[in-house]
Image (cartoon, rainbow, N blue to C red):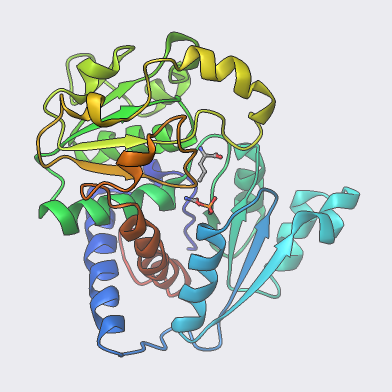
Length: 309
Ligand code: CP
Ligand code: NVA
């Protein structure tokens, strides 16, 4: 049976481990000039309804380097923009391509495509989740810190799609995660309930950024206004006062704290310029690792070769 990757709750612990191991292996092999053409003859479709630099290019290059072929479709250039139902589009695309990566607003649309496709569907970001991003980010933590299990990860910022995927990852993998969000922009209770977060467990919530970053091994932030929220930026800048990740805030974290950001970054808002250029920051590794992680995801879903997945 085909599998989809719509949220990190679709994965078990072993699936995560398999993907980390395989992505790191594929990265090493690529660096030695070994090209694994394991997806020769396969086609990935990408339907993107929101802007993207990293995710799109990482998926396209991943597919090409594995011997396959990507086809990028902006929603406005397809019949979707003229109201062809998702159910019909999904059934048609299933006759042409071997896997579909989608970036859109409403998570239910990706779910509808998955329900009506006979091919695997990957969530390349919705308003609710960004699962492939967090897989690449934990891979980056493993590379820099030797593992993720004993890490304290602090989220500072908006209770958004990236934060939601961090909650899902921590609920499956069990590492310590604390999220500091302003009261008006806290995590949707539905996300907390679906991830089965228990009070007193490994996932905690606060509205105090200093409290969150105390002794943190990893500090993560993201934009204050995600795609679709841009009109609210002025109001959000006021609400996020005190939530900027800067040297002063990081002084409460461990000295060797790893600073992560999915990018794009808005310097002077959620992150200071000096931290963006800091030696403890691993943003460019995160961005690169998306390509290697996407390869592992594409291989597992298209070849359906991980029994647990
Ligand atoms: N991090 C990330 O998803 O970047 P893009 O929006 O450029 O794809
Ligand atoms: N939260 C951001 C992530 C961008 C990669 C957004 O949805 O715009």
